[in-house]
Amino acid sequence: MQHEGLKGFRDCYPPEMAARRAVIDTVESTARRYGFREIATPALERQRLYTDKSGDEIVEELYAFADRGGRDVALTPELTPTVARMVVERGQEFTKPIKWFSTRPFWRYEQVQQGRFREFYQTNVDVFGSSDPTADAEVLAFAADALVDLGLSADDFEFRVSHRDLLGGLLDAFDADVDRRAAVRAVDKSAKVETAEYHALLADAGLSLAQAEQFDDLLAADDLDELVAFGGDDVRDAVENLRAVLAAAADLGVGDYLDLSLRTARGLDYYTGVVFECFDATGEVGRAVFGGGRYDDLIESFGGPPTPAVGVAPGVMNSTLPLLLQRAGVFPAETVATDYYVLQVGDTRPTAARVARDLRARGHVVETDLASRGFGAQLSYADSINAETVVVVGEQDLANDEVTVKEMASGDQTTAPVDEFPGDHDRPTYGDFA
Picture: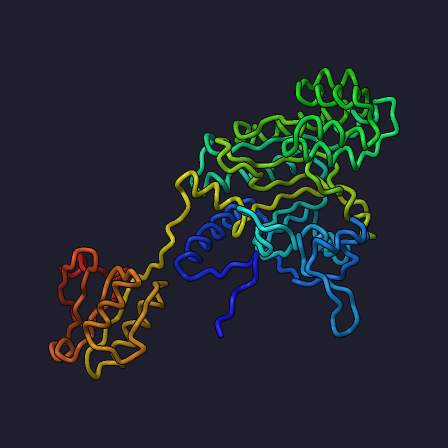
């Protein structure tokens, strides 16, 4: 009986995984250059980690169940609540700011669509303990640099930047009893629904239709001075913070990637300050590639001391980032690569094993025969794994105190003294002995 995988989950075979590993390694390397330190986090959390903040209805979007101890648990749908819990538990042991990153899978029970799966991988990058605009700017700079390191340019992506307190201050300036949470969620949906439906959502949140239209016009104008004039001190403070973040990001060299977009809201309730989303600049990948922002109140809401925080989470597998890389033609090749194949002919295993061991000690990818195959079958296998160089260790070769070094791309080959291979060569090839 043939078994099928679950909907929304993907198998990843070696050629595909090689490409995805290259993406992950690049993003993580960028994070390390900024001084972010790697952490590991559990796949399971107590359900109340999510229901306490988002209500019981969130359970419908989780892989949630009762474990054998009767505890209500869930597979983690995102990392931010987990790292908030970690900071509450042991954050006092670390010098501030705390700068962490991790790459791992997450699970959400939601509709499967292009670039959105039920299991997906993100690299989460967070700063805890700094309210300075430079912290927001550094998170933006990391994200932009990671995309550039992946081969993208300013023509390929843009960050749409806004401020949650600015939105809240504008809503408070209206003479209406507005449900801020519902209104911000309406703003977050504005690009996905018709204008009339968007205005109706704002009206459901407490604005009149006329106020909803005025609010929408204010956001669309992107005129920060006009917003301050309308909203007063609360909006002024948010605008000053937003401008400070944009200025710091420009100093860090990523200002050209940032666009002011006040209709960008981010749907999660815990965001408090600057928020942003990354989009394909050509529009071909229609959905947000990833997003992030400031969440200064979350640590305190989990029982910790007041702790400002800001973060971002690029999706590195089963997400829209690979779609953007593919659209731009910079997604890594889906192929395996091998530096050396050590080919045995006859009773030569001790010497072949020594050669393979010495090459691996130099950090190279090396394969040898595991199935007692003949010369031709081994050579075909070496070709199938894209071996760059084949080292033939045959009985006749050893009788002459040598090995054969074959360059697979050209087919050229020569011999080398067995006692001098690899010898002093860090990466010996055909050209070193021809």
